[in-house]
Length: 105
Image (cartoon, rainbow, N blue to C red; front, side):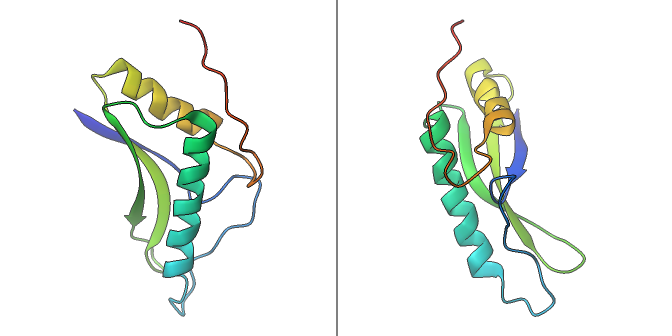
């Protein structure tokens, strides 16, 4: 079965684009998410079969917001573990791009 884990729109220790009443944030927030998605791939490696990083839109009282999510097959152990790694080990700053070593099985 398909599932997803929401990660964030930007690294946790960085300022990020915010939803606003003027609605002029969409392009900037989506670009920020794409940049964060690529940074996650650089740090954690590409998605294995059964997992996919994507920019996900979500409704909010003040307007749609966007975030990086990892969609995965919850019956696929490698895909599930990658999704959980994305949540736990995502870069915390824009400069946090050093690849994380794989944990031996």
